[in-house]
Length: 180
Image (cartoon, rainbow, N blue to C red; front, side, top):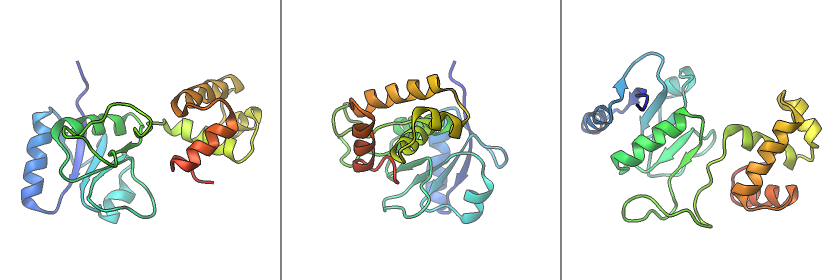
């Protein structure tokens, strides 16, 4: 059985709030005020919600965000299935972004232009490698073993379709996955 999530909903428009509440409850999630698994914000979240919530934040917005990026950014017209998947992904520590050109049903087949889902740790490893660190230095900086660093690099190579550290970093920079 799939674990149901506790969602803190930040939606100012009463009509949108009612629609999102119905969508979340139909998926079996519960709305809470304290200790959520995920914070769902319709439009830009209040600074208070973002700063106090230790849970990942998923934002529904139709405009580009500046500054700190939340765990998830989806268009406001997101469907129930896509929203549910995004909430579970954010709760699991993944970054969620909508495709630049969504298909008719909101999903795309995985291909060269599909958004990558890196774990936060993979993004950290790639960033440190991009700063010129060796596997041993990355391991020390993250408090993990060299073997674990190699495991993350292999996963990155597969996800980025790269054959070397330099190629992985270059693709990460080009695709906006990391910033140095």
